[in-house]
Structure formats: C-alpha cells, structure tokens
Image (cartoon, rainbow, N blue to C red; front, side, top):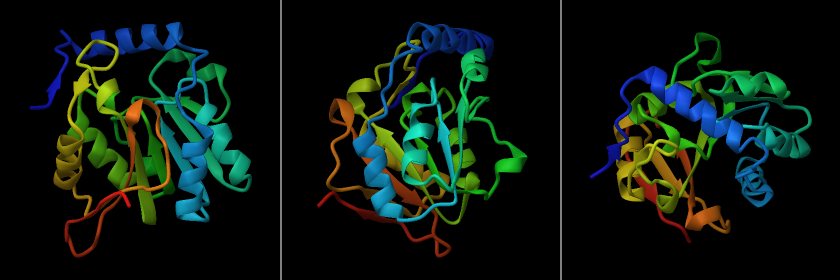
Length: 200
C-alpha cells in the first residue's frame, strides 16, 4: 500500500524540501543517457518542462540535443533563482500558462510529492496534444521519509497514472536508470483505452 510521510503542514513540507535541496545543491541525479533516450523516443520537441530540477542539469542536457527548444524547469526551493532555465514553483501545483504547452514533461522527482494524484493530473494537463510525460521512478528511492515522502511500488505508480487518465503507459526499453529505476512514457488517449507496454 502506498503511503506518504506525514508532515504536520504544507509549510513544513516546503521547509524540509528546501533544506534538503540546499544540502544537495551540487548533486545531479539526472543522467545524460536517460535524457538521450527520451530524445530518441520523441525525435523532435519544441518545448520541454522538467519538474524538481534542483540545479538545472536536466534543462541543459535537453538543450544539448534540442538547442531550438523552449526548456524550463521547476524547483520548490528559493535556490531556483540561482539557475538559468529555472523558476521557483511547486511541481504539484497547476499553472494556467503551462496548460497544453509542453511536448515533453519530464521528472525524476515523483517520490518527492505529497499530493501524487494532483501532481499527475497537473502534468497531464501540461502536455501538448502530441506530447508525452516521461516519469523516471525508482522503488529503492521511494523511502517514506521527509526527504522522499512518497513510498509506492512501481505497480502502484502505474495505477496512479491510470487513475489520472493516462491511457498509454510504456516502460521505455534500452535505458539504464539510476537505482534500478524505470523510465515510463505516458500519454492520455482520446479513447480512454488503457494499454500498457512492457519493457522489451
């Protein structure tokens, strides 16, 4: 059963996430090989939104492949202003200007969510008509503590995606994610048909 670390308030959650961000400000979790695999899957994207980016590493990786693209990242910490291509924003929260605007929405920070259902709905609304959500997820990093509050199995994450309205959920093949993670390619379908594609 999935569970979420019990913060006393939303303000405490933001405070803890900001403190952890500052402690790990120089760390980079995103891997160039994962970003490259997303580029191979999509071929072309005019816009990329990355969530929970800490120090803008993901944005710069995408720009190495798609220099033409509009690339932006969100970070809940006030350190966001230190990094280009980054805005301070809680990735779980919708933003009107971003609805339907992004060909790729990417995150490796889903385990940092305390409102996972809201986050997935927000991200679904952000992708363009032909866009995709790429969610990198590791069960071993999902540990039910203040730094990584969401604890869920991969099967439970897929269930959350289905409930959020993603009709296509695919485990992307030929990619090695950190911490034995997987890269999920997710897209809503007009027909509402649920179809899962396993890793080849």
